[in-house]
Length: 60
Image 1 (tube, rainbow, N blue to C red):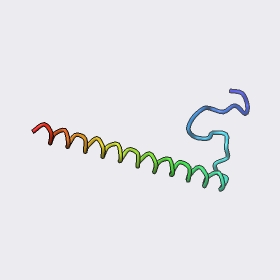
Image 2 (image 1 turned 45 degrees about the horizontal axis):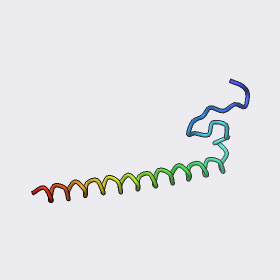
Image 3 (image 1 turned 90 degrees about the vertical axis):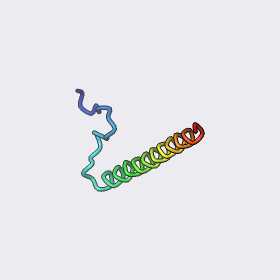
Image 4 (image 1 turned 180 degrees about the vertical axis):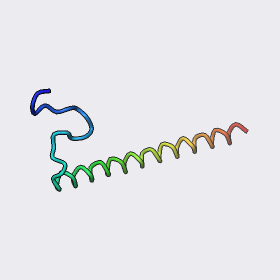
């Protein structure tokens, strides 16, 4: 690997994460992404569950 070349991954390999400002920024960034992903997953699962319940009610 060439000096200064970075590995492509979701974690920033070339940034000094021990620096407080980088640590805070990426912690908040990944926390926000996690919260948004959790909310989207909840809404999708809730809509699928409601769809299945309506299909069961219409089948009888």
